[in-house]
Length: 496
Length: 128
Image (cartoon, rainbow over all chains, first blue to last red; front, side, top):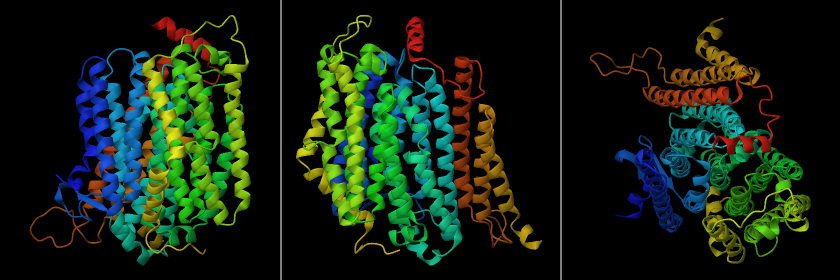
């Protein structure tokens, strides 16, 4: 069996396992099957990445040759994202067992089945080479996510899920309108085929409208600044395991598809010329970096604070894209990967605290440094990574982003990046201060260290943050390969 | 006049889309929001189906004497999209039912704004 035949199974494995897991009884069995499925999919993705970096893999479904049939088309860019998604899912599951046992009462089969559906949807979006297939997988993963968010114990989780559903559906429908315009103009849904046929009709209003609809639709899924309103509450009130999983995967996939549309389907010399996309993305990115960090500094609910910080971090990724250069796109891919590591580690540490104290309010974190030293140290170390202290993964992505900004001659962006990093120092420091510099008030109950089932995966994530901060061969290599594939051969900047 | 009529389907699409979108944004009632969402999606289905129409073509069914027929692919796509729409409606309504149970209302004007973390955590512990 060669790698091309094996590659679709990284999507199919979770999809098939979801059906099985839904009817499994009890609590341990569903988790075991889910973990094996996610791990299998990660292993397949790990084998796909080196193969896809050499040559673009194409798998026609049902043996119908593309563009008639649906095609999975995997190159260095989506193999990289798929590996990230599948491995983040496996690592979150490792952490999730203990946390889910506390938060989801009774049978857990349906819960894990939804998780697997969300995972296979995200992987499907990443691997497919068909635009309508993107829409279908987007809805599979979104629907599962709405239900998973509603599993939260707080009743506000229901409101968050409902609002997410409304906004998410509007976003997905915008994407569908864009795809409808593209189909009307070219008569094809296959991405590679679209890229060939679009130049003939490039100067029509329908194609320009299609680009605008697709960017707004995916911007909603990506939580780009003015379209981010669903994100903070969905992250804050979802079960901790789901927050950990979503923080590392959902927005990353949305960013990837947006890049796929902007660069592969429309080609950069179209998308950045007919719309002032570089300017729009840059303004929104910078606004997101500032507004997200600013609001995060004043949150009392720690999960919400980290969610707003995610809005800011999405800003860094979009900023890399808006520079429209090889180094900018490399920085975007690099931060896509590193931010998944950082946020997962942070949410894991906070989730472990919530597991013990049952609250995410900063007041209840007072004096925890002495009672849960391992958890709070993990949080502080992951916090260093989000600030961007050297030797952490966060430093690497900010370093490349700054290099890309300097290369484009935008030195003022460097100042903005440093300023927002200082704001990250403030919001991380608030928790460190509460945990270590204040005494635990007498009226708050004493707590024990988090169980090992939560502590070990958290520390694995923290270790990964430092590993990828020191050994950047895998991440930088894969990110620049991904950026090169996205821009296509012979790309030499865009002159508007 | 003939321009307006020849684009009749597209006028319907735009009108439905705007009515639906307005409902989603302006209505506080969650069931009405979902109805608006449905209208919004339906307008896109009509857009898709319209794009597959071949003038003078018959339905795309294989039979004697039919040379010109409409493009069947948009129909298939819309079928899939309808299934997606039904799934969204059902999940949305299910959430509305759960919200009714939790809050006693589905009128979404600042619902949940004054929910307090401590009190909810306490209620949660008592339920267990």
